[in-house]
Amino acid sequence: MPLDQLPLEARPREKLLARGPQALADAELLALLLRTGVKGQPVLHLAQAMLDQFGGWQGLLHASVTDLAKVKGIGPAKLAEISAVLEIARRSLLQELARSPVFDSPAAVKQFLQLKLAGLTHEVFGVLFLDAQHRLIAMEEMFRGTLTQTSVYPREVVKRGLALSAAAVILAHNHPSGVAEPSRSDELLTQALKAALALVDIRVLDHLVVGDGEVISMAERGLV
Image 1 (tube, one colour):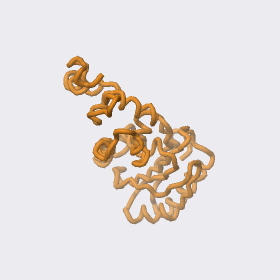
Image 2: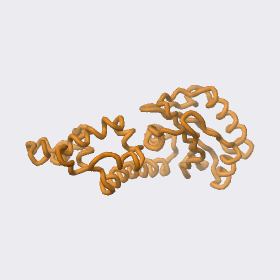
Image 3: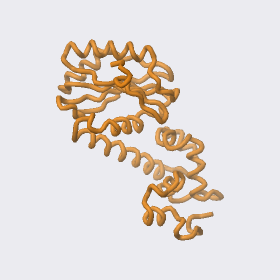
Image 4: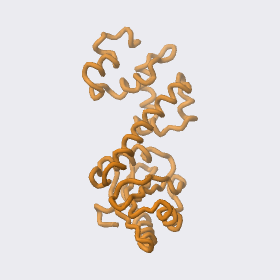
């Protein structure tokens, strides 16, 4: 039924104000952003249909403008609001990483990379450039690839690290398959980058592989 026909305590906005956002189901949170449904489809139904279509929040938040535009009832305003929520989350985590050494908050690093890389249909290789205190200088997307492969050029990572006066880096890439398990090629790439960056006194602290719902640290596996 439409939100205005629900009991007051069951409406998402009132429920959030009374019990906090953690009390809301995924569809209720999305319904708050969408605000209205479409003819014959109340907003809660529309929200649940979108989550089902895109495979939950990860898929929805990484959906392209073209994909979202195909959903009946999602116009520019609603698309902008969904994108803004994701960007707010990213910036909040980035500010947290910039304030203190990244290893003071390893969970925040993984959360940020999940927001940034999980759910993409192509492979992306990024680098977190760190200062001498291991605080974040910048996170940059260095290379993009296909569904299964990305070409990474160590000299470009070295060049960018020098330009930013980085003392250390954390490497990161996603597996579009959703399986975060590092491959043999990931191990070889890590060692090649580690050797190249060592020539200019930049340390490789970790290489994080992002899948659906999981981020694996290669350092924790003894592979860095």
